[in-house]
Picture 1 (tube, rainbow, N blue to C red):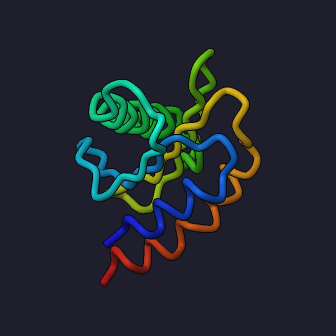
Picture 2: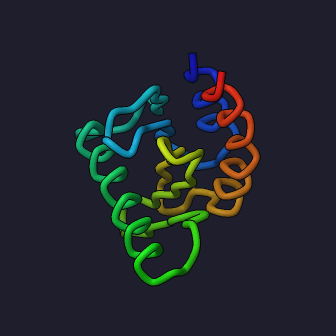
Length: 120
């Protein structure tokens, strides 16, 4: 159901190796991956959900308001996460030379459509 939208993210963001729509419980509703991706993506998805959950808790405790986006840049991977609603988050993983600006733009553009689809 969500695979076409996730595959579109993979195709339109330079350097994107994975896109996923996942619940804050770590269970993904869909995932698209580049053929060259290596490693255990299940573990990455679960940890991604845990990170976003923790950031939501911190933001609430510090009265910062809702988390709009979270990005993590490591030597080998960049993660960009954007909440869809109170249950789900949209995330992409990029190679280090991936287009971070395009990833941020595409996630922001895709979230409203996903929110409507999830509300049905």
